[in-house]
Image (cartoon, rainbow, N blue to C red; front, side, top):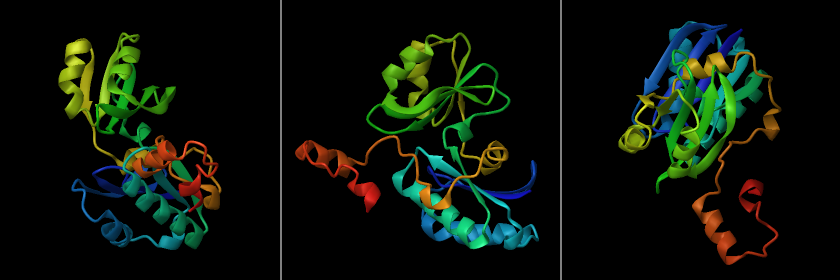
Length: 228
């Protein structure tokens, strides 16, 4: 099965083309700049370079979130558009799950820095979720992580490495980048979703919505952003 995997959920732009589990080609850009402009040309370049036809793509696999609000929307909208245009399957994979490393044993805790000492985090073991992805204060996550004997923090760990070593000296720290090939492998066997109903998994309301809810606590239109 020919699959196209996309991830712009964070600073990097990563696109991969797979034939089953075989990697045909991959492009990784680690600069957070103009993903909305560069994503489609990157896809086109990869497809042409790998000498395949877009019409042969059977599955689009996209990082569904959490991550950058704008970044998530760029990849998700592109994935939905391509899935409709090519009449192919659409699959979403957790952006955190895609940050895990298949060579790591024990518990993996992928992180995305959400600022203000908060993170998006999940807990995984052997490619299976142990705890659902969540938005939480990093101190709370450390308390949860202390329950496990063998823990490796992966993903955007640089800003938290010192605090991890201080609180959990036995824990390992491994910085990983978004990897569309890894994303594509994880999405091979997942069920396809309805394209029209597919939305990013933000896990946290945008700041504008939070402020609106603070000033309109009785407002019944709390889903206004989703509806717009």
